[in-house]
Image 1 (tube, helix red, strand yellow):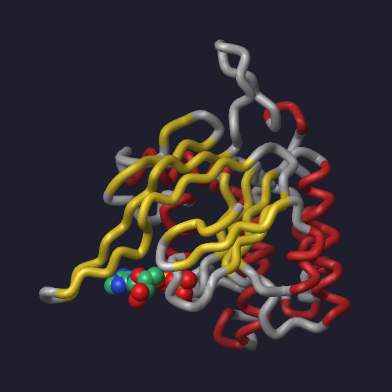
Image 2 (cartoon, helix red, strand yellow):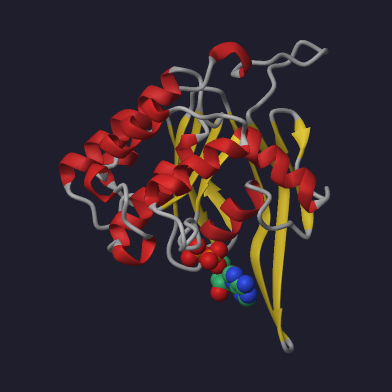
Amino acid sequence: MPTNGNSCQIHSNGAEVSPLEAVELYRFFHSGDDETAALRGVSLRLRAGEFVTLMGPSGSGKSTLLACLAGLDEPDGGHVEVMGLRMSRRSEAARAALRARHIGILMQSGNLFEHLTVEANMRLQMSLSGQSDQRTIDHLLEVMGLTRQRRAYPSQLSGGEAARAGLAVALSSNPQVLLADEPTAEVDAVTEASILNHLMERCRAGGAVLIATHSMAFTSHADRLLHIRDGRITHA
Ligand code: ADP
């Protein structure tokens, strides 16, 4: 669980530091003469302990937004702050260090090293933030319904198992902020409930969660629903 010790930091001006804040994000992609505006001025702020879901049709900008929030991609305009520290327009090394310390991220693909087992992927992620704890690994594998797959390589997992393994990796460093893109596709209701319970427990302990999902189970338990369309948050 995130420790409450740093879940509610206070600025010197007395304001509460947000675990994650995005200000006026813009992101454009170019292909020949074509320009796609994937993000058009997205601003959002997560509070410590908040469970927020992000919904929008395919192509609306969800993955681009999550990548920019995690510092995996750089916005063309605007900026992201993590725990009050600027993420955007810093060196790749600085962004990676901030991410390792504060953010767990599950993208649609590329979450696992192919040459490592599920458990070894988790162990590696933990070590990046200076941690090592077998009990956390065992617990997360159980939550994700992946205990039997702990020694499997990514190529041996189904799509749904790979997503849940990626989520286990994202959570293994006990991050203050979890960002996840459709973590529960192809999952049975019991495992989905187990994952939801775990995430809500993290929020009760002060963690912040932002999940792109259409799962009714998740949206019905969210503190807030964000909708994105054509690169804009349409209602929050
Ligand atoms: P979503 O996750 O909601 O499906 P995306 O963030 O993947 O949406 O995409 C938003 C828009 O940006 C889409 O029109 C998509 O085609 C475009 N896009 C995303 N990534 C790239 C890229 N690397 N190159 C070109 N266009 C991209």
